[in-house]
Length: 344
Image (tube, rainbow, N blue to C red; front, top):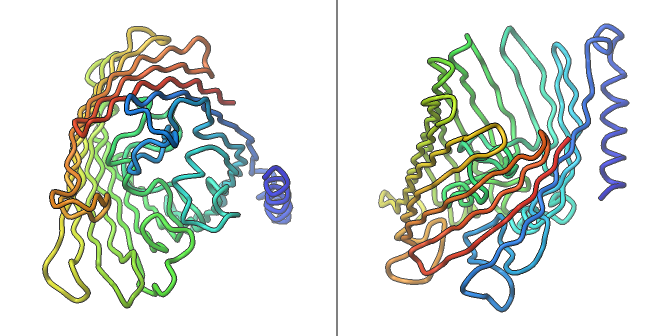
């Protein structure tokens, strides 16, 4: 993987520096890295050390492991930007299992061009436009990801056009390869689309509405999927903040039919920072997928689960984070997880 990253980084660097001298002077390359090790104990004690299949992060039981580690190169200029990051860890192993082997180690690979004032076009492998969580643990309020985060896209491949008319609004439209797909499903020629509207009425509030429209099956079995993601981030005080989110999806029961299966998932997370080194966060969430569109159980009632978690964060220095979390799901699953993250 190291050789692949170095080749890709050198290729990107040579290409970007081949631009005219004015652009080269303005441009800046930044190298960064992230690593998060974890230990998790599932009280169901699975013999294969694997937690339930709807968990794609921190999902190995009773072993020390790496959830996510990556090295990233970022290029930023007045009219051009680019990112490439290569990764390893159980997140890559399980969340990208459907991708070709080589692509399973690509965390991000994209290039963007500013085509007008505050108007950008980015193409490649991009972070998902859906949800307030990411695979990078330090950027999330809780140690583990929520059920709606683990079961909606973390990444996407396609083209994204973004317009920020002012400091309050950001609008985006996307053409995508599919629902969390770098490589299209064989036999699928159906275009997929996404939209995103983000509103910042002030420094203490962020509101976001994202959508996805597409088909995640071969065209012979086409079932159109319509997905909505809504969330708000509210900074109540300097110490206390709340995130509330709601996902709602529809998918055709059969090709060309008007009957729809639906699923939905609300989540609320609250965080209190005692100091800049110590914080506490709690989460309550529910996932209802009665027809098994996203999480298949093979049972008549499908997947219907409520979960709770509580985590403590300790930041001994500015680029190190230690966490411990207890998580309980009413589908008879309880786990305790600890993690240690480092970044530069």
